[in-house]
Length: 112
Image (cartoon, rainbow, N blue to C red; front, top):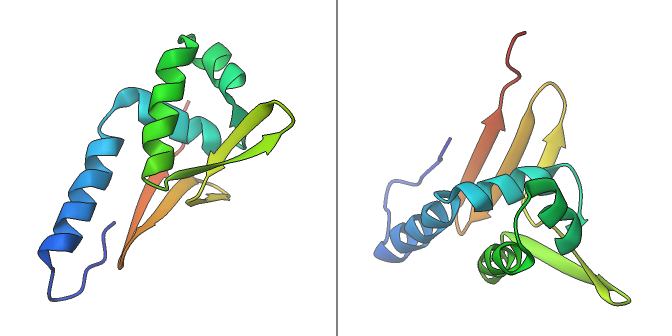
């Protein structure tokens, strides 16, 4: 769901396009859904996704530069988490704010 004000500036459109380009990649979406379950380090993400470390690190870097994920250091390890909020109830929700716009991705449970 995208909520928008009557006047949309070129800057707003460009930021939203950049955001949706980031979300258009299967690996980045997979990372976001895994981080919705809690923070992870690169090694855990690599293991869970069966991908090499440089690939996961590259995608995390793109998400971090766009302020979609954040990181914290604990000794030599770096843990990544969503900057967007995650709500857990009947549905999984990823919610992000892009300037004046709120973008939500809702994952509905499949029957069976």
